[in-house]
Image 1 (cartoon, one colour):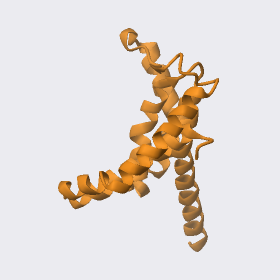
Image 2 (image 1 turned 90 degrees about the vertical axis):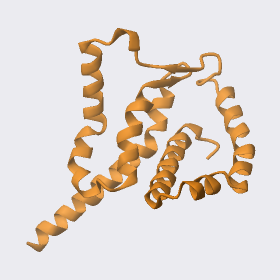
Image 3 (image 1 turned 180 degrees about the vertical axis):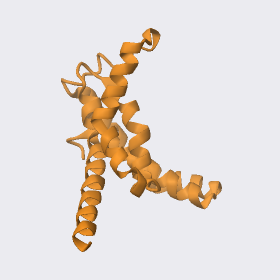
Length: 161
């Protein structure tokens, strides 16, 4: 966990989606905030967060001198930039989501993939694109598992016919 803090950010986002999905499904906001801000959760953040921040900022590749940057040029929105973003989304995960959406449309992980991956691609932390590539690993791994499960189920159904 401490040796790969960037993929841990992706795992953390998936956990947030799970919590929000489960608690808002029950629609009890008071219990949501009581459980979310419990003593255990606050203490774990107090001890874990400084360690992760120290690691990330002391890492030579992500060095704190460049900070967190928005990678997309918002001021220059033109057809080429929008086209390249659409191609990136389509190639990275759009094809696969189209293949599995009907089966997993009620799964919170699929919605986390659909919402988070475009935003992760928009940010750059440090001098290279390490953040966007590594923070997307947990989402792409979950997507891979959904695709494998869907394909095996389709093969089993075809064999039974």
